[in-house]
Length: 236
Image (cartoon, rainbow, N blue to C red; front, side, top):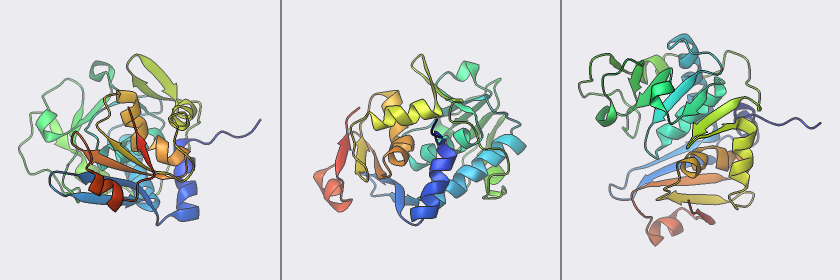
């Protein structure tokens, strides 16, 4: 039986073959903000986040992380970190072992809650935080950029969204079924489906050996499509 790759193995495979090439690009059409992450950058972030989930937040494989984040490069890196740690991204905060959110969405909660900076360079949060809520920036930055624990199995549960539970290999299969071709540079904007939106952030570019352009806002103007040399558009 052929070996089915997990998210971390696919990501590190991209680092070996084309580590400097873009994997995730984030654009805010209104402000002009643009952040481009290579496979190496995403892998380093994934390792740091996964190590923090284990060492700082005491999570184990199978624990649930509610990622209450918008379509953004931070959601891509945090998804990568959660899956590298063998944990599950969930849309049910009430069942989560950790809530990861933004300053404007953070509230006091009985569930451990951290905020993630939306700053273009991921700088620490400067705004006051609700009681019990902490900034994840320092905890993540102090971690090594090499994953220190076991590689998760592709059959491990990875996502709970809209009442469905998908393993890592099922996530990748769903991403391949979105209709994009090998090597595509995919534009993802205004995607109402929570599942498709999460697939766009990381599983899709890994599954097709391509890259993704995540656009904040309701639509992406034609100038962005031309500027980013988009070859496919994701419809969610």
